[in-house]
Image (cartoon, rainbow, N blue to C red):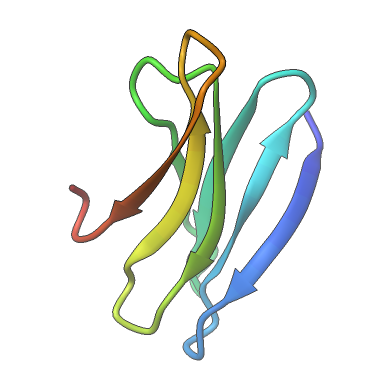
Length: 77
């Protein structure tokens, strides 16, 4: 596994990005070091590209048919 890119850091020190080799997963790293993986159910890859100061995460994912879609994750939903 390798980190593909770190895309965005919120003002409070939270960092988001994407990791993987052939299949990718997004992540959120909190200032205390806790890391949460972001993996859209049924997706072959998930990419996290931004976070705002309220913790809303944005990104995209690739579905089983190879189509890319966007997502917004707020409060875990």
